[in-house]
Image 1 (cartoon, one colour):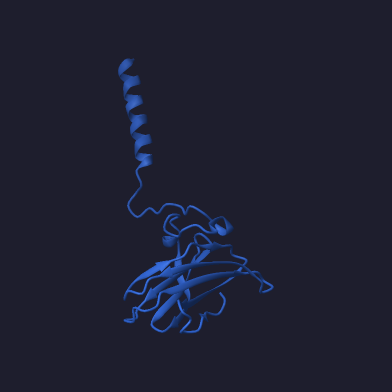
Image 2: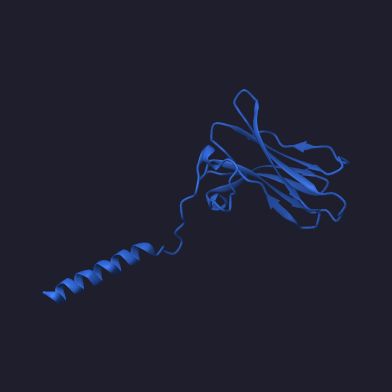
Length: 151
């Protein structure tokens, strides 16, 4: 009888342990959804890998701002990449969230130092019922603020 109890306990422990090991190719669920993603990082929440696509892009003097949208999280953020050899100006990327009436609800920004090939991204703004756009500007305002169309 003790052998049977020991075997059952061993098999049960093995089954539980197997359930804790992720299978190859398994993705973990995102850590937030919709407005619950507001001001959270896309990497920390795994939203950066949850059905992400670039929806809008705006270029300004060899700097690029991309509106990144995660369908898995229903959230957006701005990613800024500097491709300029001019190291005089830091870039600022903005993600803006609008309601259906066109009112600006919230904006987040990220500063990207001017080193060629440098990039960074903002925290997210979320919710499927909103509109988003990205903008890019520079320290010193030598170049005008440029913004994408809304998504």
